[in-house]
Length: 339
Image 1 (spheres, rainbow, N blue to C red):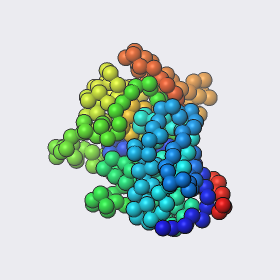
Image 2: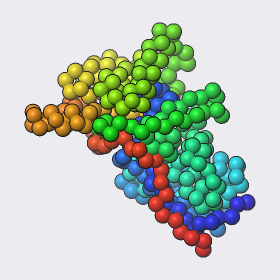
Image 3: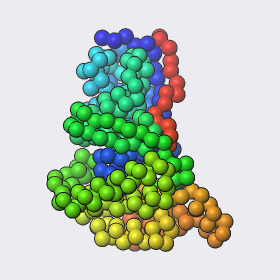
Image 4: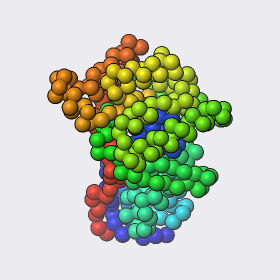
């Protein structure tokens, strides 16, 4: 059993957007806001306790059997023999079940804090890999972004063999998150609506979009990102048809909305993760320039248009975050010495 070097550690962990249109389980990006704060402390009582504070504390589980942070710590215990008795506190300021990577952030924060407490010497990709064991199918997109920051490409040959490549996102890229009050099933449940196989035509189309999006992020071509990001030929339409994004939001509704936003506001819309939140991508400099010229903000107009369309379907907008991709991932913010 490894001995604790610190009695308690706190980490800040950013929210994330996974999939990025057609990049299902491949692309992800960290956000400057919202975020959570995770505190892990050793406990000599032999028990595991989870305490939730923050804006969404009433909406998350504190049952260690189901909490993503606790699941990740159980797997860490199996790997390294670290203490299985602890107190975990989460300041929950990422809306749960809205496609913004809360469970991945919880798992990353718990593993990062344990890494510091027990001086395990894990690098950040290893933190992400262990955190991913708490995610459905061990998918690494959300946890990679929350751990490493930036824009991430996940390549995998198997569940055990997954590589993360991280790039600095364009500084001119902004994103607004429209979070509706739509209740959705878990990410694991929404994955059941996805097709097991795709046609050759869909595969070729998807690969073309993914390749262009990857190249656009690497070259910081914001215009190419905006024009390519919305077009997922497979996974978003399947989830939309299955009702994962809310009543009335079928594949046709979504495609028409994407076309309208791109044409009228030069804003790209994607569903954030498994939904139901909408991510609206835009050029910060273009938005600033046109706001001075026209006395209106393109992104504000796009947010209002999406919100209005949701309200017409009977859905309210719970929250809006206007933010940017984050170059930073999870960071330790405080440590207490040995007791």
